Length: 88
Image (cartoon, rainbow, N blue to C red; front, side, top):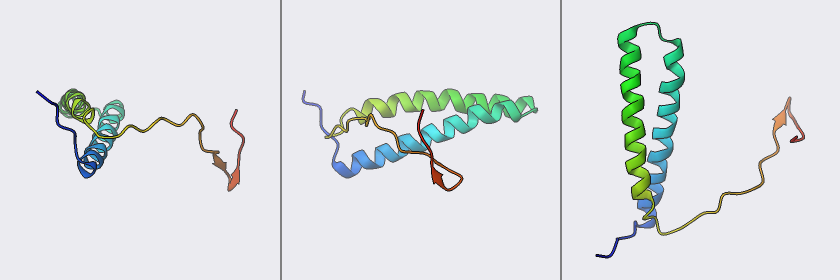
């Protein structure tokens, strides 16, 4: 059985969903330290667990994307106080 590739627009949409889900996951993990209500903390932990599972499934689908993009080795120069700073 041949594995179908995703169309370009499907790959882009899936990439955006993965980025959004990753951001939501990071926010839930970080906010747990600021929450004092145990019920809310448990709900946030459940969200983290479900998000990790969803990301694993989404990444498996993303492997069918029709393109590969190399990760750049260079990093952008940071701007500090309105001026470009040096990367150490």
